[in-house]
Amino acid sequence: MKTNAKEFDEIARTIFWPLYPVVAGQMLARCGRSAGACLDIGCGGGYLGLELARRSLFHLRMLDQSSQMLEIAQANLTASGLSGRGEVILAGVEAMPLPEASIDLAISRGSIFFWPDLAAAFKEIWRVLAPGGLAQVGGGFGSAAIREAIGDKMRARNGGDDKWRAMVRRNLGPETRQKFTEALDEAGVAGAEIIDSEEEGLWVVLRKPA
Image 1: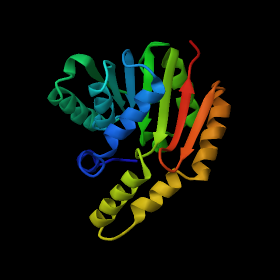
Image 2: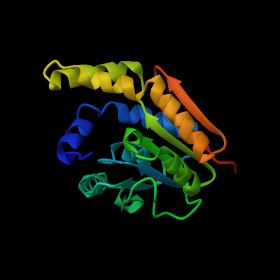
Image 3: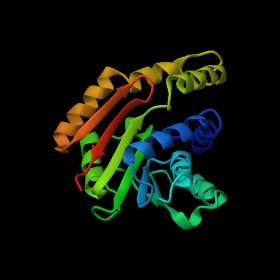
């Protein structure tokens, strides 16, 4: 699916803005560490990864298969003053140009719904995770209140059409959870956990043994 990078980014940095600090905080708390290498998969403009980097000492790698989105992410990285602690990588999740066991925290919000081969993606994320590392990938808004507020803004933006909420219900619904479960089984990834919460959203959490 072709993405209009400028339109996508405009929504991400305005309407979606309130979710990034909350989700970044939840991810850091679940990870239980504040330094190492962090990978933001399907980073878009990099807003979630950059918020996480501001709250920690992680070195940030922002990966996306869209060169247009990475141009925006690089500009945001430079503007944030964190360019010495980050870089952008042009690649898809199924074949990441990263060494085995090189990532301490892998994150992704929203892009998982566009991954064509979930099992291959989970295998690849597991491959790059370092011992003791954690991955949290999926979709959520930090809280139900933030999700509803964003939904109201998206409905207004779409001229009263609530198609965005319908998409969110589909993405975070039981059929998607079943797809995640089946892909994890196919990938043979050990110790996977699925978070399915009205507040946090729908996430796959992988913890690699130390």
